[in-house]
Amino acid sequence: MQSLRNWRPAGTQTVLRAFFRQIAVKGHTMVPHLRIWLIAIWTSSVAGVAVIVGLALGQYELGTFLWAAAAGLLVGVPAALLNWAYLRPTRSRKVGLLGQAPADESTVPLP
Image (cartoon, rainbow, N blue to C red; front, top):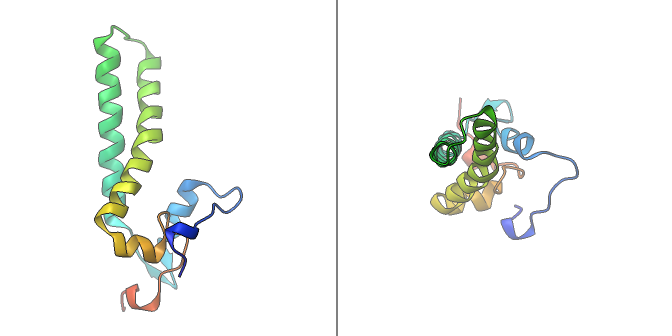
């Protein structure tokens, strides 16, 4: 098993591709529910705060919402993945922070 300490990014592989690579493991569909919920909560919270700050400062154009969406993605996704690693330390050591290491046989649900 590859630990988080030895993790290296794999060339041009994007964060989202590495994140969703874990969905199908050996023919079984495994949706990482906790990570998806954490990403949704973190990105929407950060984007919401950015929109509120922008509107409070009198910025009422489209750019405010675009910057808020970018801030939500750039800050929310890493924060959610770190939050998941904090909540599930054993699982994050098994599969890696982005799910790049294959899960062992004991974690795959039986049909």
